[in-house]
Structures are given as structure tokens and as C-alpha cells.
Length: 587
Image 1 (spheres, helix red, strand yellow):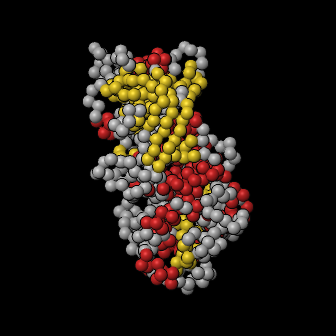
Image 2: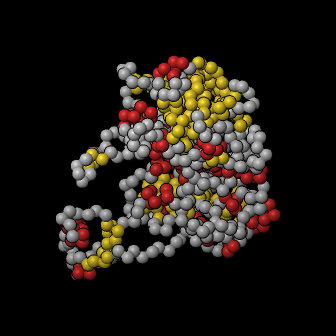
Image 3: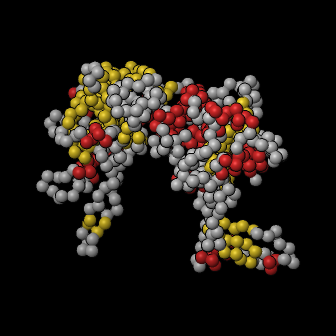
């Protein structure tokens, strides 16, 4: 089944042969092996002993393994084992997943396999740095990637690729006659309903019957296993930081899970129960094999939002783990990505700078530091999306936008254990700047002299947050006496969102702070510097414009050097008119 899919894809899927790899090739269509691969020998000869092979850029096809590291991997490539591993690998000492991956590679008809812990020298920083920089290309150029989705359990134990499957207690075996009723009729009888139920999977256990054997025609009916495309995103494998680019850049993926086997390429997807109609998420996030009119920001924004939810064993890998994706986009679209912020045009750059802490306030790392204007230096979930006001036109409020990046650390905190992979730098631009005061949290607002409950009046909340962030009129609800019950609105901003007030004490907008410690320092009213970066203007002039702002505070290093505090919105034209236009720099 897998061999047939692979051969069909490699022979006829034009889109799956597109490559933007950074690895130099001698000719179009020729794949070079990574620096080191595992040579399992002739796939037809099971007696061959796997060994480490130094490729010296030899051409060849190979399979890559994408996996979670188990609690303890005894077999790792180190400087003192390099020579021995080139003679023979200690297969019996390998984790079950590695042993199974060797067998799968052999069964698929390939000779070479790439596994990170066996093909990168684990105690050599320079080798790791060199190989990790081409990690994206290694997975993109692989003929196929084995995804060990459920091999490692929650306790860190490795169980291999070929996991035992639970017997489904809801399976039912039935014998039906040769001239059977339509399966929809069968489902009506099973479920005791007048309408057909299409949630059951039919599997024939015998060959198609003849007239002589029709009375023995047995089928099994069981509940359909949840689609891989719905279950895999919730797996621990999917949440691993390095796996993001491995699953997005791999042109062909085979998913080994505890329930079923499935596969996907850049053209189609399938599973052992039959092709699932749900399109894998990675199809919509790979513009590399599509036309250049594909929106680069619509690709980058959800990728980064997902990445911030992933887990990294070492925070120093924060940018390295998405380096392959960044390199592909820069090559394909002639854009630049500065510490995770995409700059394809001034509009794209501004949209990327308008990220915010979408669930909870963010934390920082001890081992990795980045400028305050990028999400890269923070841990926690972020989002770029905030509903756009209807009937408006957008306008950039800043110009002369310029990025400066340095691969060095400028942290002055001696308690921070920097690992040498940090980035520093600044963005400079000119735009309207003014001061506003941070007030209490929106969810804690009360009306003076009114109920003790939080404000639930839609029009009041809409004045603070804008109509797009307050849901429409809900279905009326009544108590047993017929009185209308006011239901609280589920406003579309995080719980730590604060109000912004002008110098007269009027609420003019809201602010979403980035950091936990920043919010904890706000004990009362606190003025912040707000720079307007983008504006949504009402086409008919009947409402206040919506102004996207970034909140700042001055640093001690320079009077015109600022650090980002968060993102917000202001709905007050008068505030924007009072702002002065000024150049400044955010570090």
C-alpha cells in the first residue's frame, strides 16, 4: 500500500518534485545525501548490518525520521564513537523506534536513513550548528519522512512504530445475503432510526461471494476511527518545536500512530481506511509549490501562532527550529525575516509587529534573548488576528521602517544563562506618538452605582473595544417569570486586557500587555507611550477611526530608545490629531 503510493507520487506528482532547498545540487532532479546517513545495506538483503556512512555529497535517495526523543537515548553519535559507528551500528542497543525505522526503510526499498541523534555529532557544538542550519533541507530533500507520532508515551518511554492496537468493543460481525439491501438500510436497522447513519466503516473479511457462498458473506461493522488529520495535531509529537518544519517541509510523510497508518504528500493524502475527505492542515500552509500570488502573510501568521504553542527542550533553539521555513520563504518570495518578523512589504512588516499575548501574559527565557518587538524572546501563545472593522479602509501611519539585527546578546541580567544563540537589534520608523494611561482590566469594569457584576452592556463594551470585538445581539433568554435575563458577552480579547484613558480620564481604547512582570508592576494608573502604526478609517465618517498602537516605555540606554510593552487599539480621532510625529527606535 505504502510502496504503491510512494511510487505513484514520485513518478507522477509534479507538485511534489518542486524544490527550493538550500543544498547545492549537481543537476536538476539529483538529490545529494546529507553529511551522514545510516547505510542499511541492500534493501533486499536482510543480513546487512547498518552502519554510519559519510556521504561526501554523494547522490542518493534517503528516508528521514521525525520523532520525539525518549527519556533516555542510549545510542547517540559522539566524537569518540564516530569511527566505530562507521563500521557497525549497535542496532540492538537502539530505541525501538530507530530499529523499526530501519525496517520500514528497508521495506520501502531505500538504502539510506537519516536520524538526527545518529547523524549529528551530539557533543560537537560546531557540527550541531552546521547541520541544524540545513535541517529544513534534509527533510525537504528526503524521498519520504517517517513520522513517529505515538512512539514515545507521556512518561518518555519508547514503544516503537508498530504499536499494538486495541480491540474495538463496538465491532459487530454480520452475515448478509448475496442480494443484500443497500447499506443505508442496514444502518437504519442497526441504529433504530428512519434515516441512514453514515458514521460506520464497512470492511469485507471474505472475497466477494458467489451464489454458492452467499450465506457465508461476513462483514464487520465498527465505529470509524477518528481521522488522523484531526487527531495528530493533538499529539505530543506534533507539539515538538523542531517537528514544525519537519512536517511542513517534508514532501512525503508516513504517520505511524497507535490507531492507524496514514500518509500525505504535497498533492494528496490517504489512510488505511480509505482517503479521508478532510484536507491536512499542512496542505494549506505550503506556498512553496504554489504560485507567487499566494499570500505569504496568510502562511506565516498561523505558522508562528502554532509554533508559539510548541515545546522546545532548549530555548536556545527558538529561531533555529524554524530556520528552514524562514530560508524557504526568503528564497521563494525575495523577502526578509528578522528574528521571526516577516518583512515582504511595509504592510506585511506592520502586520507582523502587531502580535499579542492571546491567552495569558507571556514569560521570558533564561537561555535565549531577543528584542522586545519580536515574539521570539517570549514563551506563551500569541496571535496576530484581530477582527477588522467593517466599512473601513486601512492606512499605514508609519514610514521609514528599518530593521537592524545582530547575532549577539545584549542582556544585562547576570542571572540569565545565555547560550550564544541570542539575537539583538532594533526597528526604527517615524510615526504619530502620544501618551495614554493604563487602567484596570476590561473584565473587571463596573458601572458606578450599578450592579456589582462586570459590565455586560454591548454598547458600552463596543465603545471601549470596538464593535468588531463585541459579539452581536445574542438570542434573548428569559427566566421562569418571563423576565429577560442579561447574559455576559464573551468579548474577543484576552482576560488580561486593560483599558486606556486619555488625560481627561475618558476611556479611549484598550491595551494587551505582553509580559507577566510588566502587568504585575502596574499597581495603579501608569502612563505609557503609544505609537500609532496603522489606522482603519470609516468610509462614511460616521464613527471614530480604529487606530492600531504599540505601547512603549523608554529605556535607560538612550532618551529615544524604547522597549515594547504590548499592543492595543484606540477609537478616538481626537487622540490621533493630538499626537506629534516623531522618529524613534525600539530595541
